[in-house]
Amino acid sequence: MNEIPEVIRTIPLQYYLFFSSTLFVIGIIGVLTRRNAIVIFMCIELMLNAVNLLLTAFSAYRSDANGQVFVFFIMAVAAAEVCVGLAIIVMIYRNLRSTDINILSNLKW
Amino acid sequence: MTGNLFYFLTFLTLFAALGVVFSKNPVYSVLCLILTFFTLSGHYILLNAQFVAAVNIIVYAGAIMVLFLFVIMFLNLNQETEETQHKSTLMKVAGVISGGLLLVIMIAVLKDAELGAVDTANFNSQIGLVENLGQLLFTKYLLPFELVSVLFLSAMVGAVMLGKKETQQRHF
Image (cartoon, rainbow over all chains, first blue to last red; front, top):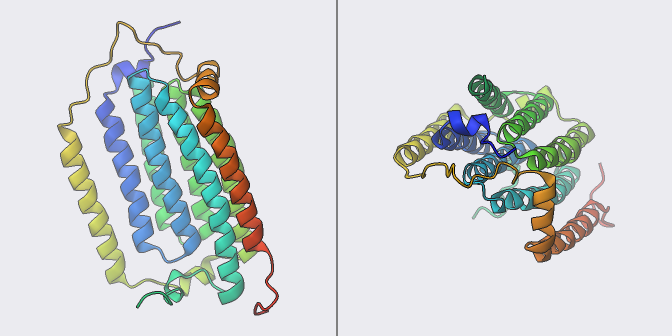
C-alpha cells in the first residue's frame, strides 16, 4: 500500500516546475493581450490553477499533506473571488453595456 | 505508461490553456477552460492526490464554470461583440513578448534549482486521500477552515449587494 506512485518515480519534479511556469505564463499573456473582462478573469483562474498544481506536486513528492490543505484553501478563496468578481462584471455591463476594460479608464489619471 | 500519460495530459493542458487565451468566442474560451480543469484533475490523480482531484472537479468544473457560462449567456457575449473590441497588434505582440521573457527567466532560474531527492525510506503515498486530509483539516487547520466559511458568507453578501438593482441606475 505504501509504494511510491509511478509518476513520482519516473517524472522528475523539475518537469512539474516547467509545466506550471508555462501554464502561469499563458495566463499572464492572456491577461496582457485580451480586453474582455470575463476572459481576463478566466486567465486569472488559469494562473491560480498553475500554482495549485505546483503545490500539489511538491506536496506529493515530499509526502507532506500540508501543501494539499493549502490547495483546498486556495480553491475556496478562488470560488469566493469568482463569485464577487462576476457580480462586479455583471454590474459594469448593466451600467456601460460592455465588458471591454478599455472603457473603464476613469481612474487612469 | 504513466510517463506517457503525464506527457499526454501536459500537452492537452497547455493546448487547452492556449485555446482559452486565443479563441475569439468567449464560449469556446470557457469550454477550453473546462478541458484544462479536467486534465489538471488527471494530473492530481496521477500524483495520488484524490481529494484535490475531486474538489477540483466539484468546485471548478462544477461551480465556477457554471457561473462563467451563465454570465456569458446572460450578457449575450459572442464573436461579434468580441470583434468590435480589438486591442492593437502592437499591444498583443508586446504582451506575448513580455510573457515569453518571463517564461525564459523562470526556466533559467528553476533549471538549476536544488529540489532534493524523494525520501524513499519513510515515503507515505496515502497523504492525498480524503481520510488523511480530512483529519488534518479538522484538527490542525480547524480555525482557517471555519474562517473560510465566514469568507464565503461575506462573498455571498457581497454578490447579492452588487447584483441588486440600484434605484437611480440607468436603464437600457
